[in-house]
Length: 343
Length: 179
Image (cartoon, rainbow over all chains, first blue to last red; front, side, top):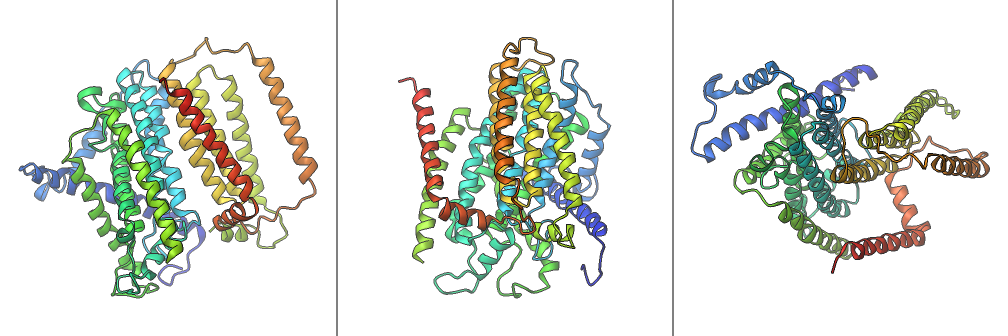
């Protein structure tokens, strides 16, 4: 049932595929234009793209056209099949990731029982694609970049999952809509006016989650895998044209989706306090808009950090994850569990 | 979600899942071919990547049985961590492109023997124990059911396994430390 129209299974499936593409590509395009092109330019006292379209708004189309007409070069000694397949493996991970993000009670692609756990599992598949790209390029810089990426992504997946465990303990469910519901129905010392967005109680978790997202997306200060001053462009060195574009879209689409997941876990998801009941049908329309708004806020934090901090050294990166983030998140879990039992 | 799908797939409730059986056969065939390629390919990286397909197939079979949590765990642990560590190790040490003739093959017979023996024992144990058991997959295993089982019925084995893992971790650190 969608807007009172009964749809067959295949019609719903086609609708979901179209909306899934939108949910991946729209945030990616928005983030690239609004933040990578414009916000950063303003931070650096320049205007950014101004020529294509009014205020440079058609620059994205120009960029896509530029990449599409470039030659798709495969190095002679490369492992052709793996080299060509790698960007698609990364994209598969991105598209699977968006499936569990809820945009309202009914606007979900898959209302999985394992919700956030599924998201963590499929997000780790992208490492395989990056390792494939690094190895198949037959290039020492690419291989170094791939290995760095793998080490980094393994190291930061742990604090990310441990940060989420705190939220899961508090909500008592892995289901994404369940987590939103728990925040809406939560109370702050008996006052339920704005529910209980977990950024208030799990602020340590939110902070660790954001740092881990920064590292998982290989954004500066954690961009050692593609460090241009050391590794040319890391695992992306040999890629050109469409395949480079696919990696690029994957990076920013994943940034958008991780921001969506962060807003579900910590910012109350698709709900706004006061205005509507939790079960209100209005959320089926404004839920996606609320999610996009919260996504823009979280993604801005990511981009802000990206353009404010210099790059870490490889050993500093590993030390930060294993010696600081993981112990802190373990303490956070223990504290959350104790407080959950006490209250 | 899975419960609804399973109910849809078997509206008569007589335990006959045509779609599931076909999917099982297709996935099993893909897994068998990939598993064969894992041991026959002459490139170590290719072998690890074929192993990804096998393990993804295992996860898919778990999903077909309605064991959502176990299937997702399979992806997270094996594809997301174990295979990545394999590839990481291979690429740090030896990562030749193309065919690698130095891949050790002299233990082929022993490996085949161990494989056949293991398959025989496992198959016999499973057939002997469960051939008469009817698994009711109309109600899938939810995460809550899994956690309830682990923390009540299987609490002691669970704790023993965690102690074993802790011991392995400490052992690894002791082996890796030089001073």
